[in-house]
Length: 440
Image 1 (spheres, rainbow, N blue to C red):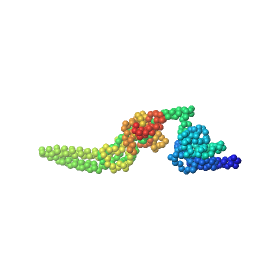
Image 2 (image 1 turned 45 degrees about the vertical axis):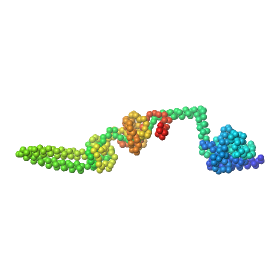
Image 3 (image 1 turned 60 degrees about the vertical axis):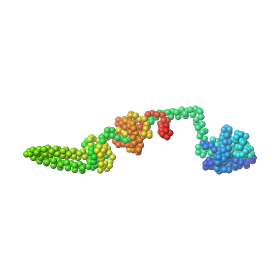
Image 4 (image 1 turned 90 degrees about the horizontal axis):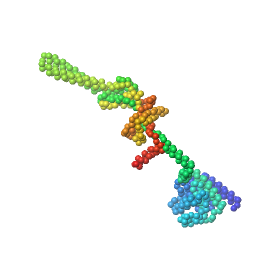
């Protein structure tokens, strides 16, 4: 072979390597490998095998699309799988029908010419060239170099490594694998504190409920929300229109009964029959006096005052003024700002085993840099519906000495449970969801 032919072949090899590097994806590279390789090696048919999660015939010479159900494609797949185990560490091998099992060799004449050249594309797959003439040593070396370049280019298109090969490499017995397994076991059973996040609010520890003394309409609210008041300070007034009329009528009836009793008493001095009428008028006078006194006391009850000092807690004045209330209906709460506790609503879907004495940390919404520690004092045995329609257990917690958050402050509380392994902490929710889905 002359020097010019060798130069031409080397130039062709370089050109093909450049085309392989410039390929946009694995499909384009496969087309180049099975079709444009004729510029360097004469062959009649070519096929590329792709390794990975889906092992398949990736490209065929002369075809733009491959039907995996065609007998030729299925037979080629069996040949490539056979060569994967038979070739061992070899990167190139001349292949004939006699080198295959009988079940594959019998169909060789129907699909391929007499001489074939099998080439490994690294860990990415394999390449097969077939023709009628035998392959020379020079052509084999040239084809091996070409396949090495194709395999290198193919490795850049995503993760083409066979996951099974990767798993075998990581989990194959050896000192490294044993150390990794030991480290994984230590990390999996590392103790960690089980905790869950829940909505929380700072509430009064011993609140005094201020209720409506009688049924009526609230006429005026005399305080502002969260205002500090002293004992006896006016809080709110009920409308006095009805009771004022009743008191005026009862007073007039009492005065009339008193005049009638006076007249009966004067008549009874000279007439014995007038004594009976005097006793009847005396009883009526007493009745009307009681009615008038009762109306006066009820009128005084319309003015509600603070039973003790503290902070008045309610929503908004405009929400209550003009509102009709029933007897005993709560209007506002009187609380001592120095005596507060934490109310936590633990969602039933994420509930953990919490007992009195468990730790709680409050992270207020309005103060992202502050936190307050508390201890659970009481846990509700039954979940109740809360805001948003969710079921939650109510927890009450006492703040640690020196911890005094502002009354009414809301935030997120982290409730701590027992110590558990890290693997349980990580898999607790997935296992709970799996049990709910599977029903066991």
